[in-house]
Length: 210
Image 1 (tube, rainbow, N blue to C red):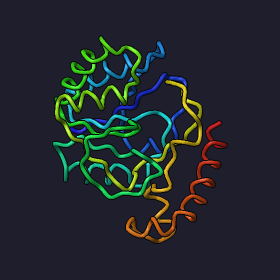
Image 2: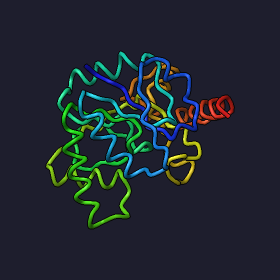
Image 3: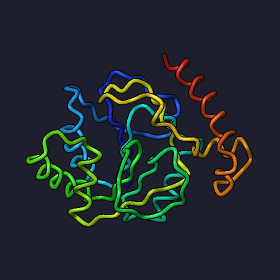
Image 4: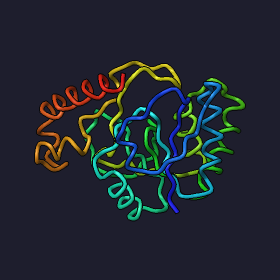
């Protein structure tokens, strides 16, 4: 059975779009992002799982859309939000970055967790997405980079770790295509319009959630 998990420190109110799914909170009360992430990968490994962060907008009809993709690629790690400002089509890759919304098949989280702990022993300052990427390389695990994005990052001040605002939002969010009446293949021709919709949407959401 597929389960949904949300990483959080317990301090942020989730966007109302999370109400589309039944989820379990994984709370990092000590604000230790790397340690908590490694432990959480082991926890979610008991089931097929979608692991999300707490500062997202989920697309309309999120549950149906994401589960349809997972049915197509049930044994693949699927990253639903990566390289947010780049246009590309769905493909497998060795590289791994961003972990806003990722699907993990049952059992794979424990393998990653164990390898990440081993790597971290000799590189204690590494961030968790880079650490996960190195673990995937050593385990020879590819991940599927899926487009279009089924979530949008609100890019508010992080409660998990510091980052630069404005760098983690994507014009390639599926809801924007529906608004313009275009498909993903046409998106690169409409980047300016998509970015304008994105700015307005995020401004409204942030104001609502403050």
